[in-house]
Image 1 (cartoon, helix red, strand yellow):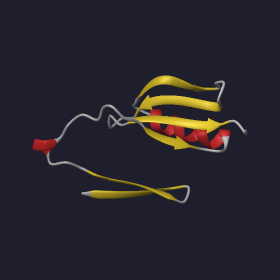
Image 2 (cartoon, one colour):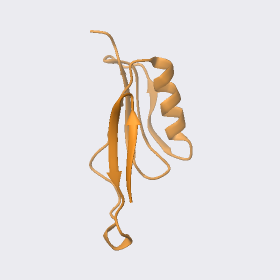
Image 3 (cartoon, helix red, strand yellow):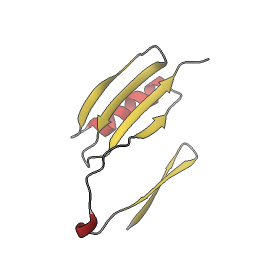
Length: 85
């Protein structure tokens, strides 16, 4: 199966693997750059449902909000809401 997800005017596309070729995702993260703090919080909290938070969504020296998690399907995510430069 194939999927296409529209996110803010861009597309994230993926496909599954037959069971005999499945490998646990590792060595990457899907990163979303979100401009609005409230939207970054909404997306992060939706992805964390039944997932595992690796770094809570918080302010950092480079971002108004940044957080890392693995969603319920085992996909690693980074959510970044950068500061104005």
